Length: 136
Image (cartoon, rainbow, N blue to C red):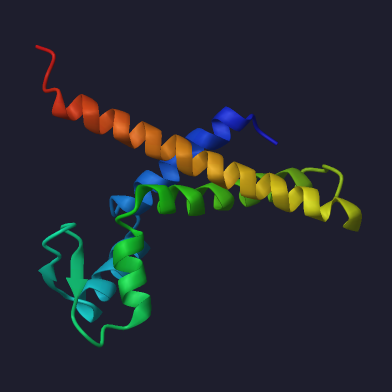
């Protein structure tokens, strides 16, 4: 498998693409979700959107899930880990025996959490740099 740092960068790239509508399938899904679960107002205390009553659960989940940097990073992390592990297996790496499957699951979960944390940290750092203004 590729190095962990390379996989983290790949997970961040995937999370960025998912969260910023860079993939056509995500644009289509997000547009359908926003149409099915329109925001009717913002919560005064938190500023969180309140969706129309009766909105389908999947639509609210997509709308809110794509706003959460940590959530998108987590799902990008396990997706990238599975893709890298699958590519390594197809490339001739040893298949795990049944006794190793729990360890593989733990490795997947730990990497997904690391990708979520690294993506969130990078996103916050970039936001702080953007708020500080241009360095002209």
